Length: 425
Image (tube, rainbow, N blue to C red; front, top):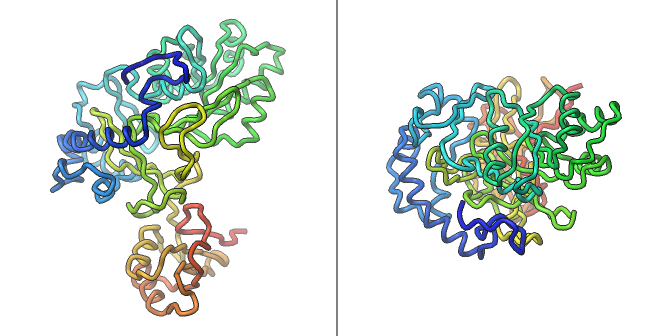
């Protein structure tokens, strides 16, 4: 990061966060050819981006023509080439840490300040130089705790490396050391508060909480606030991409959506494809991350979300794109009559029949007596003709399927390409 002016009038971390949106877009797109060239120096990306001239990748349209590499692909890629599937542009021996997440999936950490870009969500949550932060993410094998460490160090905030578990000791640390900030999962913060109440301990020192790694229902946020933590905000991050987006607030009011990180290009694509959806439509989160050690080009997170269309700059002063929070998983693969059906197959059916504007495969009935129905948005449902589509369903899935037509815009905007509504009782 550059041009830091912590404590600015708008209370943002630096001037990058308040750039004119067109300036930001232009500067990020101007960096794309260099990122693609850097990625192609890695063996894995060289295979994935074979034949691509980096100089041609300087627009959203050109970016959208590149393949999506999904998180679900990493295990197979890494089995072919240890440890990172050849996606690391910095040699393993020059890295700072190597992590192993369940799967196993291996993730790198390079050398450099705030490598995970975690200072932005921390600063937005209220972390300041000279404060004290209790870090309750696990320090075992996975990087979440170290994301927090690097961001806090960048801000000049010391950390209590509490990790997860040992609830009584967590309360004791808060009682004696008086941290002003908690970082960890929201459910563990609730457990700590309940334990403190049982122990009769005073943890009113907590003024801020930055939570991540699991969903934060508004009911849980309200419970945490009502039980003594005035500010509870979320960050959206992963072991592969680092910090991607984060919530902000002004005077205790949480603003809609999450502000995108300054080193991330966001696309929302139709699950099972690489095709960007219309602004506001729910789809899979795909990010391009400007990280020279571990460049990610169109990396599919497997998460569902949407851009806040026409929302404008956040009231906090940050001008970057805002996305809705986590809305579920994009991998909706399901098994029907012993055959797997994938979102990519549904998208291919729609591609072969241009009259289909949007498709959603609904699997109903009871297990072993499944019914597959492809609901298709078309301009003229009364004149649409189902038999060719039914034939394509059988050709691609090897299963029988029915077709129902609907008017444009009538299917739910929830990112679902396959909706399994079978009775499993």
